[in-house]
Length: 341
Ligand SMILES: [Zn+2]
Image (cartoon, rainbow, N blue to C red):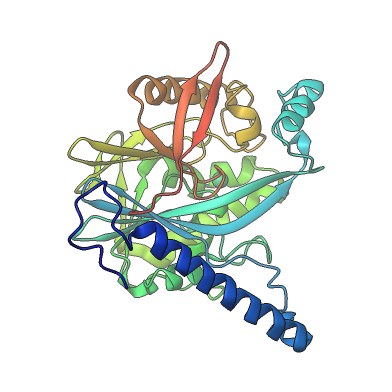
């Protein structure tokens, strides 16, 4: 019946597409009718009860930066009080949250880490929280596993800073290294600050654990701790971007391959619904709030001007996107789903 191969383009043959299409429709309609009557006869089969999953599939998402592959890994989330930002004016803060359709009483901070495959090495940028902050966090090992990577395969851990939500995933309860073969690149300034007696003495009791955690990491990785300063090269294709203030050695990681670039900026923004509009608003965890705000202003301006993609540990997972200047402040444009990495 179908003799359309030889017909010239645009000319409907006697038994052309239209006729074929009609006959196919008839066939389809016929099978639909059969299906409907089958379902009517067996109503139980039509309503297969599936249990609701109640949770997401693994949080691992990849993007290419030139020849380098970066995988965002979701460690989980942390809820903090709205008053965590002491310089935010409460009325404006609540208005901005409302404008962002964020009706939560608390601020929900995603905690991300990033795996960088340079082709020669696997570099993990930050490590999530481990078991420090309870059951909403500590998912990084499961995400890594879902991405097909065991902890023994990580060659290098590059730290943005030594806060517990970034280094908590590095040591076990017993104090052993979770990543047995990894060296650790960390700012000399940050490591010195977070392991010092002076910091321990100066911190209020509820934050003294920060020092204990930094010391536990330094002890577990020992000789494998590789201290850097300033805009050092961390690995081929990865270089440090000093962004001090949140902590004294707080550092972003610039990933470059050819013309492609991604800056993973650590904790430049903790609350995306607020700090793009109001980059001068600081968070209670900032060691030097004024310096933190200055670093944020500088890197936002640079990345918006250069149109460079960012990734961030507390941006909405997977945390990739662009920053655009507005009349006042900035706007974050989360990256669209990448079909081909
Ligand atoms: Zn953090």
